[in-house]
Length: 276
Image (cartoon, rainbow, N blue to C red; front, side, top):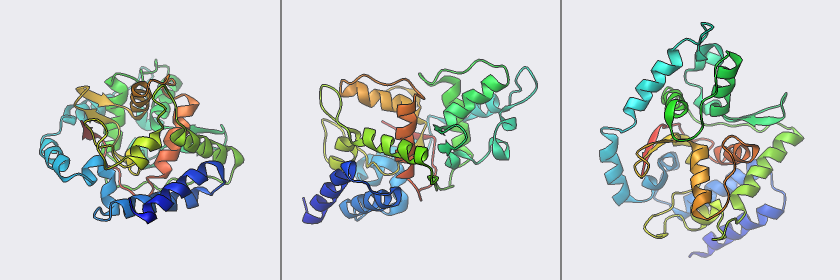
């Protein structure tokens, strides 16, 4: 490993305990991946492992010719436009009638002092209109609606802003801490796979770079044969390292999503995506 990469690793570790602003974190995160993968254009990091592994990319591009999530987008559009019992639709709950807004989530709601994700907002819209909330797991209507909303936002870039608010900074720092903290019987962190080991073989897989993870969810995962939401993927990772997952949309996951989305600033939405 080159000396520059080792220094970047050290700086990232130091930032866990020493205060650094989100802007400084973002610059460090970007520099790390651009130095580690100099042949990858920054704009291509929204393609996950396919931005760094030519063999995997070729297979992925052939799958994307006939994407397995097309039917989910269609189902999501139908559900999105289907009136609730009171006559309203999701369009009544979101700015711009819910079209082309995926890049605005998650955000920190200063009135509620918490992070609001797109999936949380979808269920809050349902409850506000007298409907039962959807499950956050096993794909289904939640993943379909989220996929449709992501699809209408393709090409738009994340530009998440963290308010100058103590609670917002606490949420960001908590998400950052979760990302770098080792957990479970295998003693792994998100960063172990997606910062330190990305680009190398880990069992039979090449872990994707940590930059750009938020851009392509929900993702159709071939191993599951369906769409998987980001929080369900978080739970899957925790299960693999033998750690107890949090509940979907619990504060821990929302703060983690807040952190990794901020680390994806400047990258285009390209969800829903297809992954192994």
